[in-house]
Amino acid sequence: RPRRVLGPLRGKRIGLWGLAFKPRTDDMREAPSIVLIEALLAAGATVTAYDPQAHGAARAIFGSRLTLAARSYDAVENADALAIVTEWSEFREPDFARMRALMRAPVIFDGRNLFDLEQMHALGFTYHSIGR
Image (cartoon, rainbow, N blue to C red; front, side, top):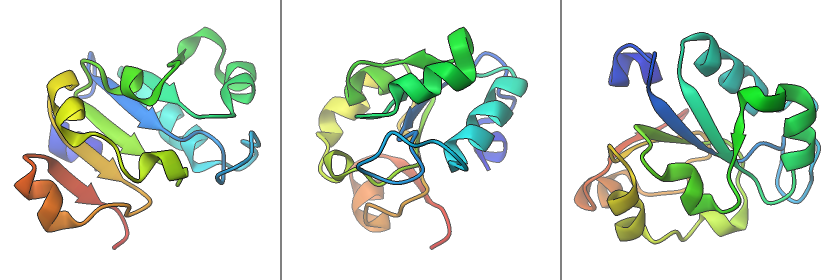
């Protein structure tokens, strides 16, 4: 779906929230983030990811191909889109105005359906709720 919305991904910067396969763990075995990151990197995008616990596991898997952000807002800075992959509680109530100001384009692909579609559109985001 990102390619349909953003066009060619080469040169695009994608922020990603959540690397672990579930919240409250650093375990990335079978994590959907792996498949997504590999596809984005293969398409020529750069990915900056944030996860409260899984940075070590991500570094072991991706090495220097993946940029790891120290804070969630660092992952969205200058991003052409944000993908939400793991449902960490800290992702549930972000400062949307801050996010919009930081992002190059206010586009969110939400794989956890954390937010209300109409509210997100009212806040000025292009919001794609995956699987809803």
